[in-house]
Length: 481
Ligand code: AMP
Ligand code: ZN
Image (cartoon, rainbow, N blue to C red):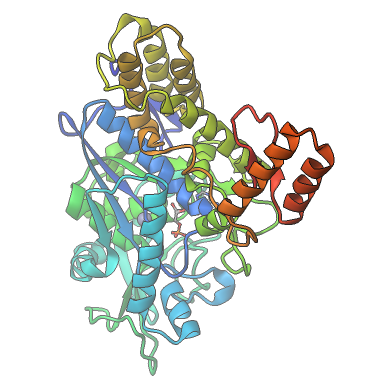
């Protein structure tokens, strides 16, 4: 079932391309990781669910996967209005803590989300500040031919490489966007690859360099870690769609400079063969903004009683290149769908997996493979999984083998999950599960005795405690908080 060629959408060429590895039998993937100045919001986590599905698909296709995700703990600047401060420095100052403590805390919070969403660990989490020497060496290597120095730092001259901005499909006059307009820049789009610490200031994070004390520009880290850990060209570079506009075009320009290679009609001159971008998770009321008091992070979903894998399910239901609108109702529907799948899989809990290639499942497995091979169409693949679960008159061991195989790609972890795991107590619940069960037992007795007044009274008192009694729920959930 893994025979179909894997077609992936390359943002650089804006077309589907068959995956052909640079190194026989291998797949080398770099994903831009989080800036650990704050908790990730669930939109950020969509980027890693997508990268995880890509990695799982490559493994399932038989490639030996080397996946790198970086941790950005230096260099990523705030928006224009914030006068180009480093996000890490800013948060550390606001909290009166060291940057290292901030980075540790939010890296661990990110890892907790990664785990809760069944995102597989990459081969390496590469931390930007571990690569400062390499970044300085990289910059030294390209400085003469591609950079110029101003009082504020070392700048990359984008006119020195061919096809600058090809990935964004725009010749941007707005420039780097993340830093203040800088006096003396040769082109609006030129960007800092080293930012000098302003005279008279000290920063928590600064290093000596040929261009004075300072810190690397954000784009430099990904060029350097990609090259060091995967080698140019590697197979696939991923990130959110915002990176298609500034971060990745700048990374590509640096890579071209480093390789001394030509224009981007040859995709590998960019440093990678395929550039892939997930579209955004959007939320209309602004809760995704990290500056909103209670922003949408995974823990908020859990606190409200949604299992984190309901969010993974929500992501899988959409194509990664489509915008996905977040709503609580949508999340609830995803949870219900997951419950149904888990209930069906529970019936196979005691079966041992055997013979996935049984002819009974051949058509479904082909359908699943065709969907995943069509630019990771998880929405369609999920339907094949459900159809496989619903197959009648088939051997349980065979069915289990097929489901395990599909789940290995989708990553719901079905056989480690029970229906009760999916029932999460909201953090503001005023009643315990034991109390609910006891009340429901009393209600059952009242109904047996045909005392409907008593039964209704119990139902209402439960409702006052935030419990909805669900008689006849097809999923067999008798109540929900
Ligand atoms: P950051 O920590 O800001 O560097 O972002 C981490 C990742 O999340 C990057 O790949 C971004 O492109 C991606 N991202 C940011 N916002 C969203 C969103 N609303 N939906 C999906 N991906 C996002
Ligand atoms: Zn990056």
